[in-house]
Length: 354
Image (cartoon, rainbow, N blue to C red):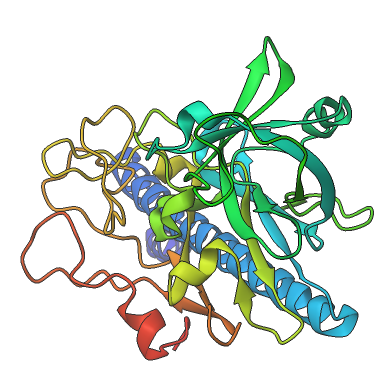
């Protein structure tokens, strides 16, 4: 009887005893947990990066619409200036509101020796005040000058004469003025009007994009006057998108039907490199734009470049001033280093997120 009771108690104890996990089982569970955590973190980071790019694109869209509204309300030209990134002169990391170009009149002397020079003509500005104008950044390559004032032709300044770092009064025009220049002697005291580059609007401060987000200029469709002659050179420091009081675009941007500004992760931009096909990157020998699709950051030597699906375009219509946001079209039917038409969605009206 006693043995029977002891056996029954042992059986009940065995049934209620909690069995421990083995070391192998614990390691398997731990490995599964680590894998799930890694996948979750990667997905989270990817989503955050995409959100930052979309946020930057929407931010620029809002600023451009704001500049357009300011122009209509003030009945004067208003716009924004794209500011080059401090670490990469092929990327834009901030923008700033700018106002209408200002004008100042004076007199000049033509250099008759360069009258027939097809590359331009040198003029000398009278007065010491122009050195101060240059020092303040108003007089630069790309400034416009009207000769003579009010009734004459507008020219573009193609070179600024410097003695050391001081403006010496000499400007080179983008083409000769054959009507006024004399072949026998210099013509003095010709009146002119100089149009300064648009200045910062009031106390407007630079507005940065979200951390790590930039406009990749190599992957954008922008005016040729902004584009450097080589990869090593910098894009223009004066990349202005200006709106008229009617809400349309004026200035360099009118040379294109649409501007497409490509938002990307700053870490990706420095790694896009394909020397074999001329995709711009740092250190390649061939420079061509536009340059989409691009190589993935995690595999910059990939034989089949791809565009990250979260890369975004901000598109501005020169004719209407309309500003919209679209995804990049990465379709690549030929398996080359370029998309068939990276701006297709923007030009056919497909909106990001649809």
